[in-house]
Image (tube, rainbow, N blue to C red; front, side):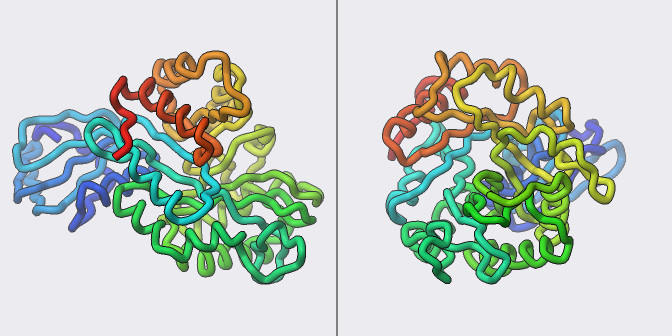
Length: 348
């Protein structure tokens, strides 16, 4: 930031950062819009106040940058976000996601949602493989467990990719919208934190609130996400947005769902985006937290036109479901080139 700039939009400074680490920090906080990373010691005289930064300091801001000339630092803007939902066959297929890069060599996929875990019971473990059919104590299907155990989550993170686990309801009476008790919801969140997020080094949890056969409770989602926000403050809480606009009106301890979700990706695939994303803005979600979903199985008439709409209207980005399918991988490439320009989808 230029010395005469207003620093009121400073969010935080993080020491000992690499460019990869700094970019992942920026993704974790939707309010961050740009940052600079110091390669050398620098003193900035900001309207008489000396601000001193060391090599490796990353300085994060919201708002619009006002850059000056400082050869000791590199500046980065957070422009758009690309999200891939994937059900990988094995760890190598998952690792291959890192081989797709933009023209500058950075990852072409910013966020990967591992699809997924099934919330089946409030008896531990709450996640059960194959929707607990047949009954099992295994938490994940073998392919997902292998990915989580293999170290490839960290391998993608080391490339600058954020990794979330999508958790669906498991065709049972429990579910994201079925909590009626704070005690039960808190126990579930503690389980997710300890046995899932911390254990496997994940960047957060993605919510897919489908397939429960239980009775929905209007307060459930905002209650459980509020508890997640409290117990996992440095982790991302995102949601696959679908048939849920009514949930954004409920207030729990002064918060609405728009206050507890970091990001949302809308998944009524193929429809006109004007009928898909603005309704969430009306309910309090910032455009910089919303992405439009795409799926080759229900493709829109003109995906590139949809991407242009995203850009023209200031939304965060795009999500592709079923990324591991060849047709969806190709479609992601088309969408990325539409988002950033031809030549920005490359496979190393």
